[in-house]
Image 1 (cartoon, rainbow, N blue to C red):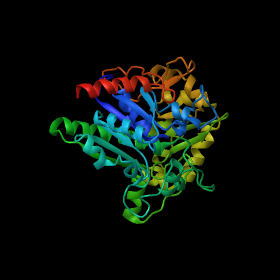
Image 2: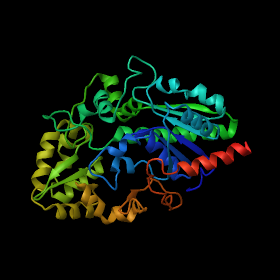
Image 3: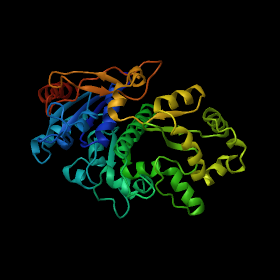
Image 4: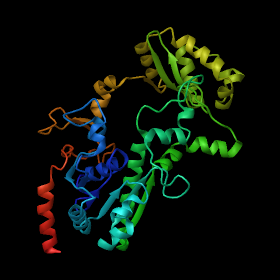
Length: 385
């Protein structure tokens, strides 16, 4: 799959995380992605410490496999260069506030005049309609606005942001998927598309079952720590030296959990016979199970539950994740050093085809690194057009 998009050229004007993550996915699939940066570079390069070389991990995680050219879109000559590039682009990606890209001369209709069959991807914060359509937005703002923070954290604590940029990364994934669908449509009909994704749309999608429950019965979910309000037992339990996440999500798994812990009376207790019963009696159930798990070490409990085929997991920190044999076996983490990034390791595209992942792509570029190469190539393309 490394070359499935080898004949697709992408112009990526986006910065920060959502748009660049989308175009990195396209680059991993073989697209030629030209990253158009302002003269100062993508703002995400400075989002540190830590830094690897001169760039932040937030930049490096979303920009491999791309070529960089720096253009000042307030400059007439540089806008002319971008128009030339646009004529040869299959996909045009931008993430400016609604209205800003049109003022620069590169809105959808303006780009379509240069390339009629273009797939034009707009990434916005709140979407392009509604009273907040022109407002800027970042991942934590959407976690707050869409209610994600209200269901995250401990029941008696303050609202908490999810500890990774799930809205940005999720939006980038949706944007890449929608772009692939638009390219497929163009293959069949010859027609381009204006693809739109928004951080708010992604956040609402991630809140789907909470929203559906509220729309059905008016319930308002609250933070529940490690638990899930609709399943029990489905949360972290204490051990002698830590905590273990246990997910006994059906009656059979609950019975196996009880058998492993010696709680053989619980499955026949009327308070715990069905999942709905267990949810209603969650606190009592948690106390009974926790009394048994707390007697064992984390390692011993994991071994016991694995042997009983009960879904469970240790609660790792990032260092433990990076060193874990299972994580290493997946091939998701792999060294990919470049001249200016000798310690660079990449987190691979989370998919494989016929047992094979996409191959390593070139490391994220320096600002404007490929300017001479891209301009020379553009001259050749113009000459043969």
